[in-house]
Length: 126
Length: 375
Image (cartoon, each protein chain N blue to C red):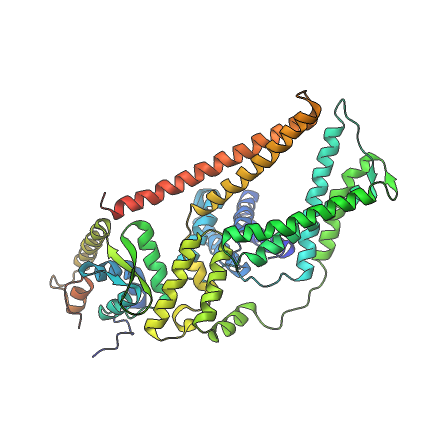
């Protein structure tokens, strides 16, 4: 099993695509911040530090791409749960289309590799 | 940054831009942009770095600064947003005590501004129907006393603010402000006519005299710090447990003055739960609390809301004085009544501007909320 903490992609890509990857993580289910970090690790983005993750989440919240609510679990402290909004879903679809076009313009194979599929939220990353 | 240090940064940046095309317009643009960044507490090295990069761009493009970057204040805002979004610890948000020399220098600069106001008042008193006043010892000391009151009040606020929510900070600051104001008033009454007096034109010497004093204090050699502040912060941050990190994070967030108490509580609670989940140290996950606090996006509604509160209070205060003056001397055309009325109007105008900013920010927020609910 790969080390989830180490990104599989170049650092510059990870930084640039982090917001899109967060939206992809939230597509299937609502998650709290720490779980989003784990999901990003599973997508090959490495598990981001809290200092990078939460400001990115706050900017997505500010843009209206995610919504938040506090939920108290059966044990432990209350957590802020993030959900993908309709606008976030549209943003994610637009980003996927743009990335597909970039890939096509670079002359890449039309069949994406497993990691790209993972980045699109399409299944088990590795 | 002290006033002197800020001036040095601005002078260096100005010289750099003048050196690009030899244009005074570019130098003035750089000066405005640097002042805007300094005013927003951006650390000196970051001010020089972003403006150095801008100067390099000008050199390559051959364009004037205004054409290449637009309005300098808007450009400074964009740079600050970028520094925040990139997670740079670029803001000087440390809440430690201000060095005595810097405090005295800033107090004397403020006294110079008050001296200037005294000059303006003296000019008004030269108008027909009024008598110019002689400069007594107490009047000469007045700008310094008022500046000391303001500095102490601000110092108390700066100390209380990182530790308490906004409303409590205001109440706790109002107390020493009232004490300082009463002490100054008593001092003025007791010393009223004591000491030598000079003819009224000497009033215009107050501002230059206090300015000269401030400049002299500013150029005094200061004790060099043996450790870089950034290094001190990092060393202290590494030793923080979750409790200590939460406390310093809350203090740094409150010191920003552009976040509501609910946002601050939520940010701290979320960081705590993340640390519990991850099991990592706060320094590993978030770096220094002050650096992390600077990455939290601004709530654009908070400052206009507080400015509305300030102007609202001032409108009430000046209106009370206006009514009291009218009750004592009747509603006749007088300088005092006119001054109070002008101050009320000025504060109402300030309140309206703050309201417009608040409304704009609220609309922007509601627009994103609309996106959240799927329009």
